Length: 139
Image (cartoon, rainbow, N blue to C red; front, side):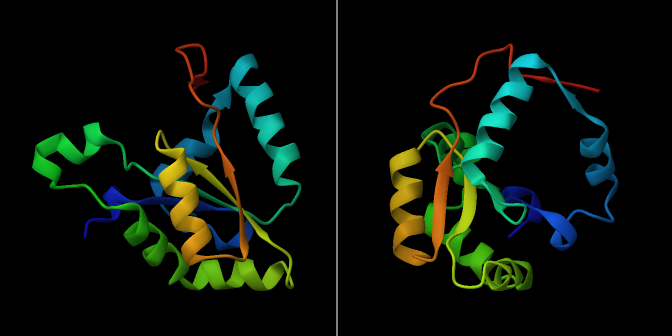
């Protein structure tokens, strides 16, 4: 399974991308006003400095892209994520409290159902129902 098919960005010192050039590119992006408001809303809802963000690309268009060559289903994304050392470290940092997991996906019900089934010790926070072209980042 290629790393590019599942993207995981964790907070704090357990970030998988810390030594990668792409991480530094992302660090240089500055959100526009609309994106800044959305980030503030999510941060308030997360309410913690230790969290996990997962982009779950499980929509039908991705399933169909290149005949599903890069498609990974929701339960497999969660299984791979929860098996990582950084995930266990984040759970430990919460000392029994629910770990906030921000999930970006178009298939919110499926993602929430799979997270609740596989990892009941997390609190799933979803992206807004839809974004428009104004929610962008400027380099």
